[in-house]
Length: 335
Image 1: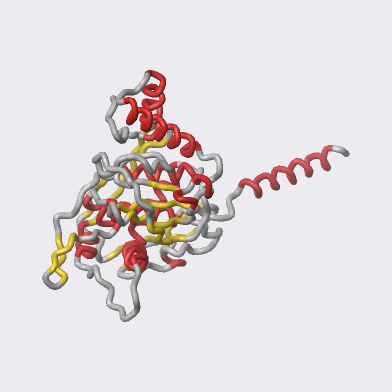
Image 2: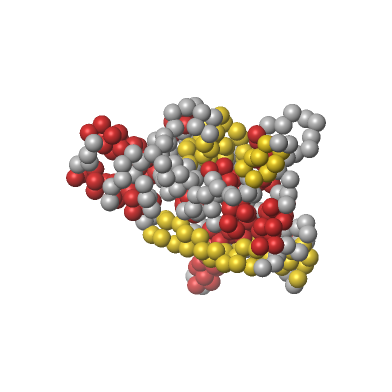
């Protein structure tokens, strides 16, 4: 007689555990059985799947089975995007399209408006293009498949963007009699497999925003340099702004604002202008990068003062170099 109640109790406990384990939302925050903000993705049992029949298709796309095919989806090319996570190299194979890159290259870089525009208006215009969203979102999904750990996803996204080669476009735009450097959209950075600080930062803004993080552009006017700010504990942030420093021009550690950038021994000494990009969650209080960036800055300062590195600091540097895939020490280069 005791067998039935015990059996029922076991079933009840098992069912409760399943309910607790089963995710009630997807990687971008979309709740189960609802459409994502980016069509045609549908949240099904904690996974984003294409459901054009339910969610529809974005601008300039037509449904094909449950997927959406764009008129710009022509001349596909493969890109292998490198990242480093916990000292191990990984790669994401990603398809880009010449047709879409050509579409972006023809878009105007100015905004016709009678209102007083800010730098944020221009940056958000580059990030929020509706056509672009549907083609960048799959990169966010590929990152989400690698790990369910939110902060590891951040690490992958940062490392991936940092490992895209630094390089400026050979195009210029004429505004009256003035020729200005061509500013690429984030998708063009992936297609061209290169970008400058502002272009690579906008690609990272998109990815971090999809992950639900608060972000801001940190623009150093004096040095004419832009980095990404990701929401974090105030005590770890730049000038107590609530945003941690993330260099995008090459591999570096979150919080290391004393490294060089774009391959030159140039460091930042001015106070950045902070331009809010997205609201969202913050990095945790105990991220290992906080201690690691402080350690590297201290080692660098000692080397800058002494002109040499001791054995202990050399071992520490090599450990950090491997963990984050660093290629530059900062003021000096050590093997």
